[in-house]
Image (cartoon, rainbow, N blue to C red; front, top):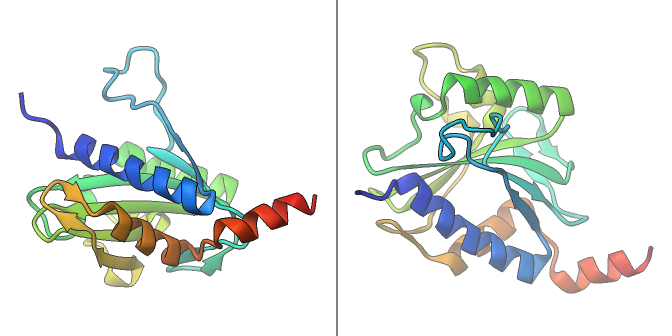
Length: 183
């Protein structure tokens, strides 16, 4: 049985998240996967992950500039067929969650796409993805960042951690610890 590229990407991402937690105190939580459980006893989740950014970090947005919220919904997508994210990669149910949770809670929502063809990660503004009309393509202005991330199904974890650190403007661990010790 072939292993789903999306599951492989999520496992690779979790290694990157662990590095970011160790180096920058970026917290992360994996929501249970409704589809892996076959819908048995697990309600649909708002995203794959919830990220907790340390004080001083920020989230770029194509619609509102920079968002200083430190909680971020994060959806992971991967493809072995497409070089860029396709709107169809985000199911209608997920687009509804993006619209509902990001709007209701006023939290940023990012869709992270990895292409095994290019080895690139693209970070998309989730609200823009959810608002793209039926049959419409994703608009490049909602692509927040694209960077070389790996080869095939394997990510260069250090390179990805560095790109995420720059993207989120994560302060180093020492600054964050000093800030926490002030309280």
